[in-house]
Image (cartoon, rainbow, N blue to C red; front, top):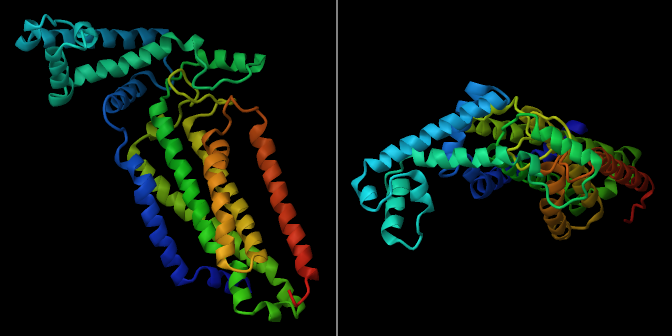
Length: 377
């Protein structure tokens, strides 16, 4: 019986529809963050420098390594100065140093043309690299005064201690990498939830429209189909999440961020602060676990709706606001901000526990009603 229910869910027409939907969604919302990572300059230069640092410094940067990094910055400044001093156009304008170039009068048209030529037409690497390094040096110099991207929140002794700990942990993991992954996983999980809604919405509605419920409710075996159908939906969702995450991480591997997997995501150079000492690899594992859990939770929600609504139009009308809330709030707190310091340290545990409890309660209540429901329903 379970196998038959699986075949009904995984029919070729629905799978084809799902494939087309996933294909369109990918090119509309996901492809950009794969295709253009890092996106532009100085992001490309910052990523290249981060790779150099990882090979030179390892997972963290201590004071001596910071001095070496600052020395390389000073050397790039000298290189930029020599470049300007060799350019007749720059010398004629009295521009012989990097600081004169970037801090000069913005109203000077000739100076603006020179800047555009150096940065954009010629794309001289050293000038972009200086910008990238300068951003990191400024973040490092002010690391004791930062909240690391945390919005206004009530700062307790625990949060102060955690912020101080991060300021001294030496990690230089970048928001360039973290934000890219968070954006990708958010849309991927949303795609998973939408796909689950497409696959499981017909679960009970199709039988009701075909008048099969009259046969089902007339026998004990038929009434037990609720559990079989739900089990089939959960198995389908598990497979769906697995396939979609496999495709996602296959594509994500092309971003070449695996070198940073062992770095602490909480750093002076990242806008995210975790309550826990999570490496980037551990954070990825946590988001994968969250994706599976949310997938199973939304499977039960869709199955529950399918068992009580009369037709497809009704279930779509109910799911639209649910998906809006999911994208706006659920993914924000349950994927993007997992373990973030602006949320209570126990938020992750309690919120998922409540969600699971509510979902189990929905199953139990509906199953009890299925056993007692009148055949004229």
